[in-house]
Image (tube, rainbow, N blue to C red; front, side):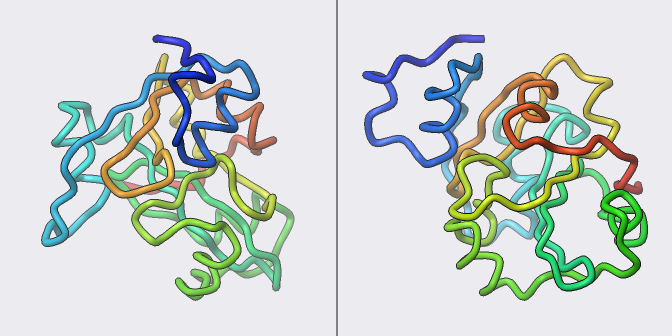
Length: 166
């Protein structure tokens, strides 16, 4: 993977700026977003020619009144009970999309687990550790970053737990 320099990063998203500031190894992938595509994540996987098991979507949930970020493969779904358990909570529901956008600073379909406006508890699905690299949103529709799961875990201070289901 190519390491991006600050000069290459001018005009980047908060996610790529955060990666660069941390000195992380990552690769940016861009593609033309089709607003009519039914799934942002599946569209990204198809456009990049990457298995949907390696492309992860970022979801924001409310766990007992605390907004929490869940990062799961686009090929599956978020298990809300497992997410709640992973952070020591009792009940999780999907957050209101407008609240998720305001809190993270990103638009739906482009929410990145990196560089969010407000740092939220983050849980990365355990399946990520089976891959050398995974792809997550770089902060806007049509832009993904590929990085090692360990890098994502470290930078987001994420908990690794089985929160996804097929």
